[in-house]
Length: 219
Image (tube, rainbow, N blue to C red; front, side, top):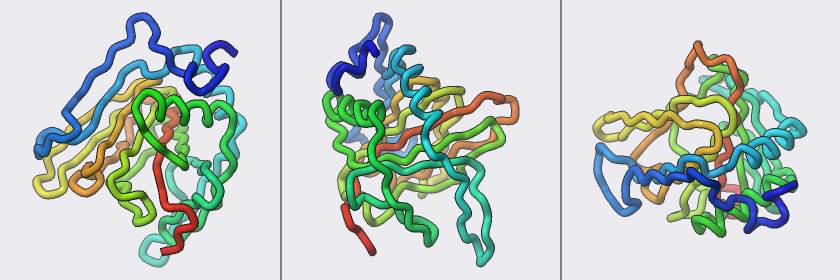
């Protein structure tokens, strides 16, 4: 399993590696969200190994309550994390699963390469362009204040759209397989994001959002 001998080996830059810094993390600008977009963060081989592991994940299509009615979300998901790092949203309590081997090494790579300190990750699988995610911010109270959120794409290219809350200005990122998008502190407070439907997309897309949350948080 070349490239996965230990966490520090996970993402050694391949030839042709490019990094696009969309905006400096400290910038405050309604037209420029505080994110860093890194193309080709994962090599094709690393993507393949991660995809093979994803096929073993216990992905579920959960139901959430909206205006008193239960609705199944348009995607499947799984939550992994350290002990006590459970996930709470829409009146749901999801117990963290233990870190799988490849995902754990990806976590270590994020810490080594970009100082992203995470203790949990939400995995979303979008079967095709009909699966989607509505407008929201990752601003749950258990997320550690001042921490960044790292988002990694695997599979089909999908549009990731962000919207400035006060002005409704929108910025689109066409995220491809292996790309990393780092959402820096301040992003969740000033911007929302969404993954809109794209009916021409027929292949699955898997997304990993690495977070640093307060363990044993019960609100």
